[in-house]
Image 1 (cartoon, rainbow, N blue to C red):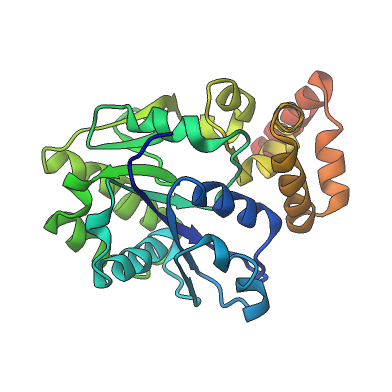
Image 2 (tube, one colour; image 1 turned 180 degrees about the horizontal axis):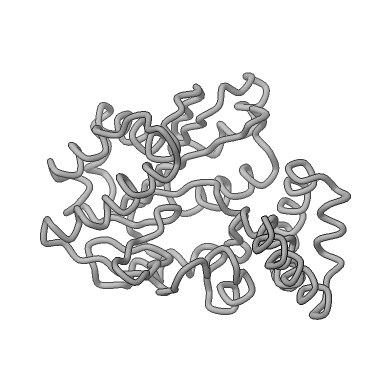
Length: 280
C-alpha cells in the first residue's frame, strides 16, 4: 500500500438525519487508507453520529444549507485551525452523492495518485463549451491545498439560491481556479454529458467504483438493468449496504421493481420517459 498520507474531507447529508449503512460503509472504507473528517449537513441525533465516529478523526453535525462545498469548507476549516494540513500529501474532497465503493478502494486511490497532475478527479465531465472535474471525488496535491488562493476559495463558500448556482460557482469554479493558477488537473475517466448518471455499468467496467444515487431514479428506472449488473459483480458487503440504504431512500417496492429489469424492460422504460418528456 502507498505510504502517502491522505486526508478525506467528506460531505454528507440525510433528509431524515440518519447515518445509514451506505454512509458507514463508505467512510469506513476510506478510513482504512487515510484520515476522515466528516461534515453532515444534517443535525443528526447523537445515537446516529455514534455509529460513525470511530471511523473519523472529527465529525461535524449541524444543518448549514450550503450543500457539499459548505461541508468541505467546514472540514477544511477544522483541519486548518488544528494545523494538521501539513501532515498530509493529499487532500480529497468526497461526498455521499454516490453509493460505494463497489470494490476495494485501495487501487482506485493509487491510480488517481499516479496521475501526474496537481489535481485529479475520478471523472472529468466534458461539455461543448467547458470541462470540469466532478467534485464528488477529487484529489488535491499539497501545492493546491496549502495555497492562499485555495484557502480563499473554500472559505468564500456561502449559501446559494439553488444547486445549479453551486455547481457553476464552486464545482466548475474549482476547476477554473486550478487552471488560472497554473496548476494541472486530470481524471481516471473523461465522459460526456450525463454519462456519470446514465451509465453505471460502463463506469463500473472502467474502474470507477461508485454508482450515482441519482442513477436509481433516472429516466423512469431505465438504469435498473445496469445497476443490477453492478450489484451482482461488486463486493457482497457493498451490495448489502447499498440495497439497505436504497430500500430506505426509495422504498423496497420501487427498488424491487427497478432491479427486475432486462433489455426489453429498459427499452420500454426509456420510451415511457421520452414520451412523458415530450408531452409534458
